[in-house]
Image 1: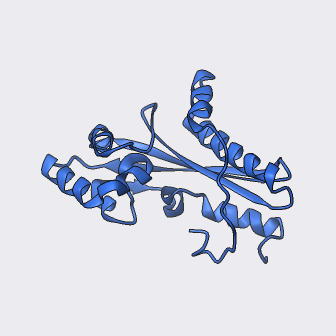
Image 2: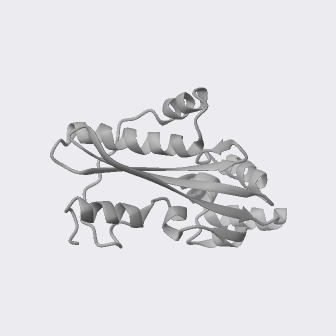
Length: 183
């Protein structure tokens, strides 16, 4: 997404314990929005401590359906269970991004989208999962809206980039404000 927006960057994996951060947020009674921001912030801060001169972007996405937080499926059976649980229901995707420099948070933002998954047959689900293969493990909710996953939905409300996993327009606005991108 950032490449298509014309940004030049390097990727450096963050050393954060995502399950522990989510569990701590849950224990404090925080919302999925707060958890997404906590994850994005932890990632940005982790890398910015190693790369002090760089402006580091951390990002994460949460899927919340009536208070249940969904993770990326670990296998096809987990993907089947997640999709079956979401069928016929509306869920919220929360995409968060945070920027840090020198171990200090400089910006963060979260955006939400509402997606209603249609009721589908087991035959459709079987065909979908077979077609997706191991790719279902790469996304929270086991779908990619930019591919066959769009067939799972009856209604979508929200920014396309948020659904893809990043509050891109607010991030680009911040990068212009921070003089990383031209105004």
